[in-house]
Length: 449
Ligand code: SAH
Image 1 (cartoon, rainbow, N blue to C red):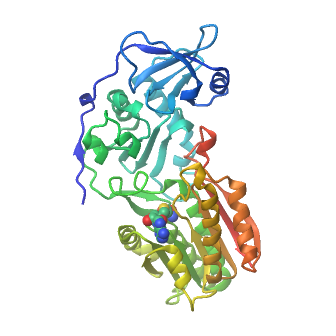
Image 2: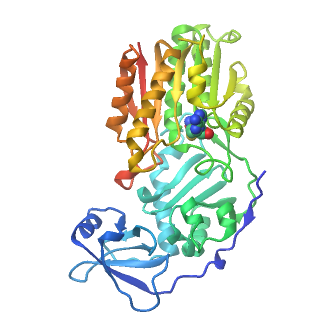
Image 3: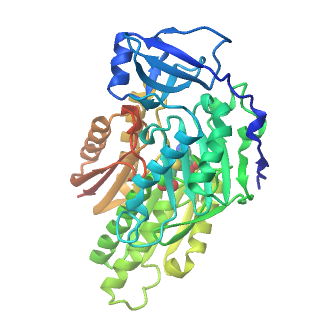
């Protein structure tokens, strides 16, 4: 178990209380006017160099040719993204009041998620969602996820480090968390301004939330692991697709009276839980709500990470009351090897979910990633029953949606099958997009005949 360490934002020296005046080249200025939240290093024509050398966290103000205010944001002299814009059009002081305002606007944007009669959580309780999605919520480089009473902040820009002394009180004021956990991306962790304790994950405010943070999602009891897990401890972006998997599982089980689902790259079993609940409801529909026949619903979770699978099993145990009738099996190992090794299981699954990690973090990896998506589809298809549902996702922003869907369609054809009733989905409603690269998640649902 990882213990969380306390953190005091005053240990990071505040940046000088001046602001830098930036002038941009034409295309950079046009991009800012069009609302792009980033100013790249190559777009900066000049930085007013009076006073001390610019440091990460300085406020940068962009002026146009005529010296009029255009935008203000946070500057980082060592980042290719020199300035992350916080305010456009009207001169605005960058500080606590602005951060509170941005947080409140972000909460308002998510009101449909929280109201009892609307949004994805309308049917059942959800208290795990993304509160701030960086650029999409006007706080570039900042991710905030809420898990029950615990709020997790993750910084993707070192420019925020000296601003934590304003951001933390703003978060406490706007979000009133029982615990506020701070994380940083690997790149921010390597920055000289980043204190050790923040690199490991630190307690910014309130009580120690423990290493497994409980929350609810569409009626399930779940646990996020901010200090040891991926992202901020759970994949909130797939929430709506998980719900779609449940609906699909219900339909399939209702048709057949049973359901076998395979969830590859399962992490802590999110999709597996929903497949099981949908399957049980579908079978109940067939049997008129009588007891579910033994083994009628089986879900297999595959992942290389033992701790993730342990959490997947724990998730089934935590939701035993609802899922007790379903069988859940975990298989640890490399997805490709396991899929290839599942001989004797041809056509044995009605629903297969493939949600791998990003295969391309850099542009040069795009083609290789597409090839891997195709290989994955071809490896999984022999296991899918005719008329079964394939769910395949990609979280690489480097892979464009069209190319991703095309490679799946082609791979289905190459396997001698056909893809029908294809539906395409992205991330959940609490992940608004603020820049073109932000639209990373693609998820295909299709019937394979
Ligand atoms: N579907 C999950 C998120 C998947 S994240 C959810 O909705 O919660 C990707 C997962 O793939 C991680 O858990 C990681 O451990 C696993 N993984 C990475 N490489 C793998 C491989 N070669 N074979 C199997 N699992 C792998």
